[in-house]
Length: 361
Image (cartoon, rainbow, N blue to C red; front, side):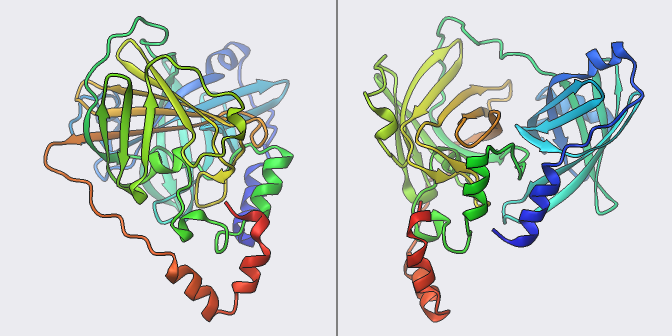
């Protein structure tokens, strides 16, 4: 890990206890889980945000996540998608916090979210380096309406192209084991994608490339353009194999079922890996839950939850959505690890690479 990113992680994990001037009744209203919507479109305005959130805008530019706010004695804690952020100020109905995120090129950004709490929701603006980059809104979170409902399967087959990959929060609430793994991770040597090796379920789903879903009578097949990975989600009611934690599968072993019109996938048996380029680890005991559903405009949304108590003190969340394409095709995915090994050889780093075999994913 680079020194600058590591020092930022330490800062981001230092939660500030603020003796905020907030009435007890308002504390109860502000704490809990919220659906966070980040609108970074150039024309973002408060008057259009609610329409976008409700899915009525046909061309949304919104990234969704989960905002969590808790209060104990005089200390407030704020999390986005399971990762801590710095609460900068909280005075009455006004809140300010920062937000660390990475773009598709793994460039780290620090944004500041300033907002007002009114009528049971948060609304405000997002700035970065003093420049406005959009607006944000947070409304109360609730279980999806289909949770636990009788199955009413819908057609989610087809080729799906990425529209949003979520907030892309950078730092998370790591356990001592997870922190040690993350500190030891060196992206120049250890990232499996450099060797054309897939980084597991979350990273494949999170990729910017398309994937195709094929629904069959006893399983759902997902074909990823990314590394041409293939995944089967069994829907015939089978249990997980015995000793699933010892399976060490690249994409894990997945079973699925329908709750209402939502396709729920549970994945276990994944090998130790990192689910992003920054080195967030997963253990063999990790469990990934996905909930895939269509919105009113026909977009496919997926809520991801990573449960991994070995590496994280709290669940990690992601939300992504895609649009179905009738004309697109899965393209060739050409990846040759020769260039990676050749560059190490030219830079006289091959011996360093071999010595890091214990860190190989």
